[in-house]
Image 1 (cartoon, rainbow, N blue to C red):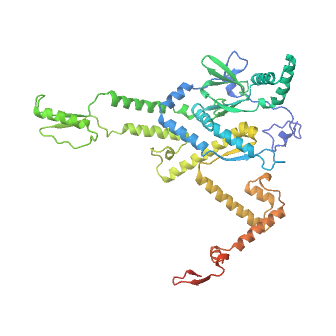
Image 2: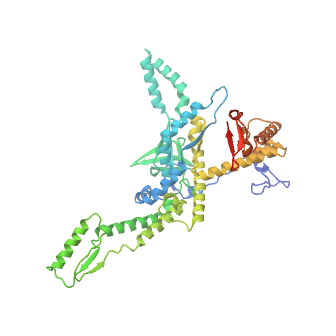
Image 3: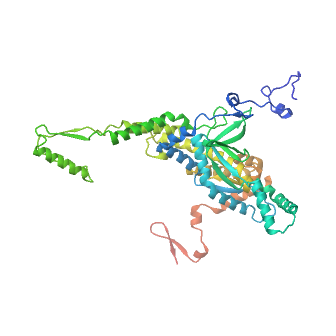
Length: 492
């Protein structure tokens, strides 16, 4: 136990270095999250928690808003990007001519078969705040029954105990494979509830289908949240903060749709103050307008005779509805941090600078979410199943180019400083942000010599002019003479 010179116990908040905590061999008290205190205690021994909004609340609004569907689709597309950039084998490499080749091929096949399901899970997390994938494994009872049928079909045992013994022997050989993930399945987030213990940890996932409840094995559930607030086990989605805006948008569309479809307001009134219903001019105007309404190209000039006044009752110059839609859509974009240029058709910032800043911030967020899902998928699927680590393709090509240029310049600094002895191997690894496994096993002297050789070979290469004037094997017998413009002419 860590104590100071006066014999007083040093709490972590009192210490000036981390040694007190490292030397502490006791058990730290686990904090109780607020969620456990306000949860609803049910008949079960653990605590049942309730999501703040229902799936009906969310999906009813999503289905009525093409704007929010477009925004969510853009975010999911950018997270998935162009797919997987790299499948890196991280398993054992000893005694293998081409280590990991089969593993990477299997991982690629798994990705091709499940990439849409993975994208749907991310969309579910954006809609409900949570997403759930379920790792399907071989069922123990089904496996045992299959093995028993195989034994009976291929072996002629007279006694049932020999069938049991043979089945058990085969079962022991495949027992390790029973818990291995065979496939992936999407669990609708709106059907899943969490049961938590007194510390707020999820102990049980319950899927509610109608009036039936089904337990989901926590070890097989991959739970991911769009964002977490206030230590809740349930994630949160910006849609829950946009209910008012989405309802306003839907009501505006409904109102204008009903107005145009059912209001029965004529577009124009033709007034003929000097003609009655039986007048010749009245019949001529009525028939002329009737014929013009049938024409495919309706916007034509109309010439009428007599005393006629025309009044427009359906003035479409009023753009309040359009402005309202744009205003609400900009709020939706802001909540998801999506730049207006990403979905198109919406006027965004005040200029090119603000638009570029919005796009840069959005790309950073997408990259952070890509890193999050890379970690989840690698930890839960690709590393345990295939000994492979995946990396998503960055959709921000400009940022990729900038990073490549930065790495090239940093490499040039290392090469120059190591060649003159100003940097050792450890300094180079730290400067380049590389681990020992990223750099082959070379000593400081060997790396210095390699840097010097690279530097000298680049000096021998010369500049563009010297390389361009260097005679090749095909031009040994050719003579270079200047032309009248100062250029070179090759004479045979």
